[in-house]
Length: 250
View 1 (tube, rainbow, N blue to C red):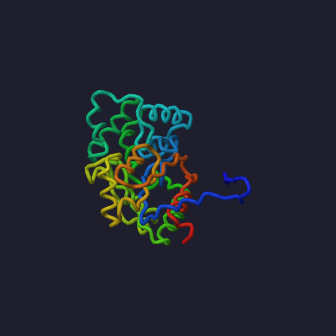
View 2: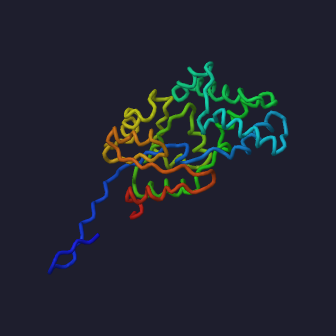
View 3: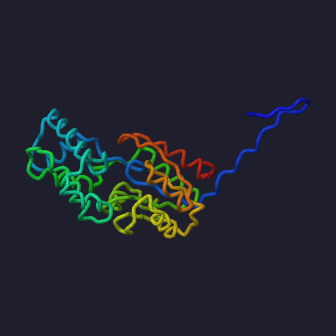
């Protein structure tokens, strides 16, 4: 609030200058894109197995599969002991990621042969995801403002084909994926790797994500912005990034 003193004019505290940024690092899931709606996921995977499910049955299966643990979230209510090792390594190795999530799906008796693998395959394809409605515009504005962009994700498969299918590859300068670099957020090393690939000082980079692991970027010297994940097909509040990066003035 403005400060006043007897006999003096109203004074205001000078606004703090915004931190100068050269790059923005983005988490993938829950920040730039969201997995498809659960019932749609189950119906599509069952169809790929040659089975047409009634929607009520698909809804029940989707609820049970979400409780078991879905790739892309939510986390499982319980990890069976025989999956504990691959679950721990899921974001470090492709084989562990697949084994963990197909194993969790297989723990649900769906009565559809091959469903666990079909559900996982949906994750690897562009139709299994929806970019948030403000993702493309945000990335385009950052590029127009001359900022570098990296996607930094704890993940066990290559997401580059998804970005290519969505026409967003040219707007991303580097992909830093945990299973490729052997480090997972919140380890500062993964953020430092991203900054190194972009050729920017960590103190001139902003990490944008939706979990406390993303906020771990502050230990690498970056600023951090944590946004709540939105449902598929909606905006995710990414316009705030443009203001913080100064891209809304470009």
